[in-house]
Image 1 (cartoon, rainbow, N blue to C red):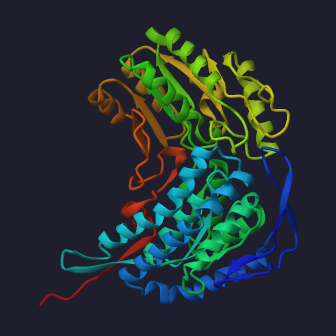
Image 2: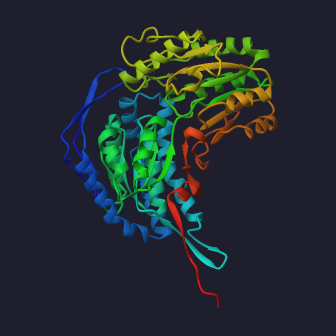
Image 3: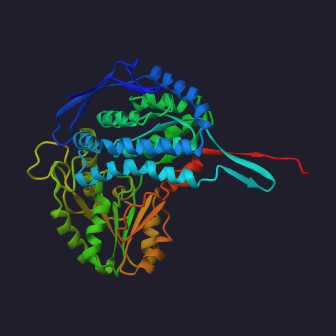
Length: 474
């Protein structure tokens, strides 16, 4: 049983002013595994004040100093990778393949930013003017529960790389994971006030963060509806925004695809992280000429996937994060049937043999049209929609007919053809034939999938503002 009774402000773990407590659960067993004491508006105010005091010194740091901080953070995370993995497994329930990737990626985020800082032109010339890229000030970050470590690390890395300080409001239901990560980050010995973390709810601490006049930029990863609330609040003080939001990503299987390779990739593009991913390829677009063959293979492959406790390395789909989210996913499975889609496999309830835990059946609908809600709204669970298309142009049209534009996938035996299709897709990232994760690629979306980008120089751009000094002619 872990009781998280402290928050992190001004370089130290401190007891929060807030007194409200929240129970923490293991989603695979539904057992209560701990409790977190939540911060409140007063804690947020103190955290922002600490970050504001620390900012002038942080803004003056050199490239070498920032790179050294980032390298220390990387080493601190790597030193406790086993503890991070155990915390994520127990509190979030992600399958082992995803948890392992998440912990490794958390460390690599700091390396990528260190290289980006090394190569970034903070001093430039425009005409006869001297241009300096300046840090904005205090950054406010709000992070979600579906990849807790990676999102906290990414936002911290961007703040340090730019020369800013940061106050983070993490997902309160991920408090055990946050605590273990904070213990790692504390060991890196950052200057006091550079990193501050306040556990708390969105309506209280998150709202106070987005409204605070001393916060210059809000970086948020989460749902599009929540982002609209943040935008309205941030408008009052003209805050800069970096928003990485929802998705309804298309996976286009072209008619020349090798199905032995393409079908497993298409499935896991939609079901990785138990479907709890903004980048999930939850719309599978298939050529009408091969629809019967592909759907038959999808059914067979989906029913082979093991669902269960994340401690089993063979498991590919773990539990959903909490009871409320499980109910939400179930409601979408009911909705799909009400809309007239055909249930290919899966359906409501828990998988056979799993009477406890927030497990959902891997569910695939066929006979889906792109106007159905299950094809247009982010479900955030292991629920996929198969949509038939007539030809390549039709596939591109369906793929782009979305309120979102975060990620897309193309599967083909002809890489040049896949690239041609990829260039027509309105998405922040397009993955061809299951290409591996590239930690240097910019991340963010079009349309309601967000504003701005993270990662590398693209991410630094969003955390900096250019100042031009015009010199008199000689």
